[in-house]
Image 1 (cartoon, rainbow, N blue to C red):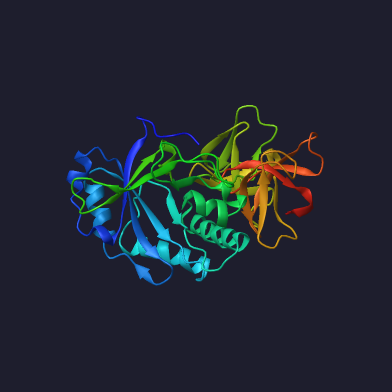
Image 2: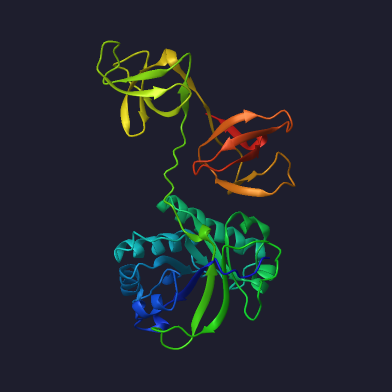
Length: 342
């Protein structure tokens, strides 16, 4: 993997072990990112998380949160516990991707541990509509995780090296914890030291999985207040733009109630082309989304069983596969055997 660089963001991660922190001094040391422990398992809430969040934000630092994973506790319950605590302390304006800290197996096999980590990560994404990352260390990844986790960005810990080694799951990182013995003004005792790439910063995922576009429209499709040709025009959809059909209103036959850029109104069905939506079929947990339409291609995303996605096209280069878009805006290929059109 690549090593540290001068233009990376400088960061620390903290918990109750550091006690009271002077974040003004931390910022003056050149620190830009602070990851804060929030929860552990489904039983521990870090009592310093609220003040760490508020004080770090007050100094203009970029803030993220992590959850310490306990494999012997229910994964989805841990995810809810994590997010509920962030809401409880008012920590809703965080800047960095939410992190799962996994560094203990509690007797789980690599397959079992990876499966429940994915359950946690996908539940956090589902609740927050935000992106997630995995924190672990190199030897743990090699011995206790499998490559299904490789679809999530990595925050890796490896000390005493300029660059972390590749492992069997990841070959790149967006966070590198290079020391657990750092000294930073404003923090008592030793401190974990990190470098982060810009990708660590999170933009709330406002992607919408549109299910329709215009048809036989040269310029604009009018959005009307009611499903009537002489009803007031309240918006316009440019030809070729995507939008969301919300439902068919029995009061206005031949019209769809749609949403486009925060405008909700009616368009004539004559000018609408519906996309093919689909869900999983005969899938127990997750459906892999691959970079290409081959079973040995890299997994670029996963789709929860029962989740809705859009079929974009059938690629003649990959017979038996669909090119799709997930509800998070990720593109790739899924095997047609595991797809049910809706």
